[in-house]
Length: 192
Image 1 (cartoon, helix red, strand yellow):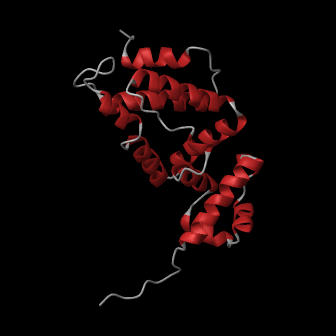
Image 2 (tube, one colour):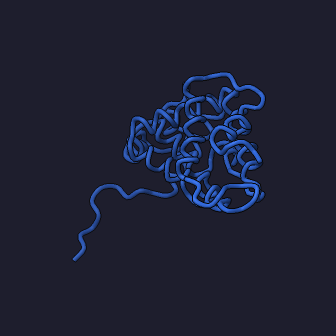
Image 3 (cartoon, helix red, strand yellow):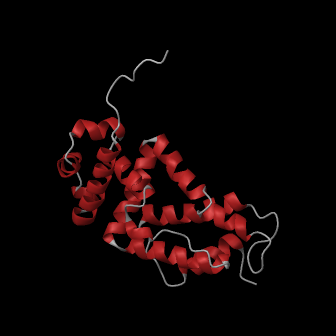
């Protein structure tokens, strides 16, 4: 016999309202002015409802990114068949985003949320390791010219690229023209 679930049931409509509210407020006010109270009021839910599902505003922002509610798909890795060109464009887009106030705060808040909460870190890593991610794209490029040789360490290459991006976000190092190409040469080897 199955006992009835105790505690409140998670409403998908409330969850979507919270994520939509958070994404809208983040775009309007920025991360520093985003509050759980503001999200709750905009979503039409109690603050305790948000805390039941997410431990912090960083966790809500991370979920918004994972659900595609932030950045209008700007972080999607293209797939033209030329991994170096795809990664150059993708890194260029990320570097452009890091130079914007909104992009920098979003990326830093994701890093903070992942550092604070292991589950968020795992979800973010999983999202970067899926079939449409850097690892997935690198895997599909193995053995194709002018891409990657057989046996290339795909996961480690992806982690090196993503790690470099995260270091840039944390250090707020200035982005210079050609940084994406130089990073790819360092990680993938010079273009043949």
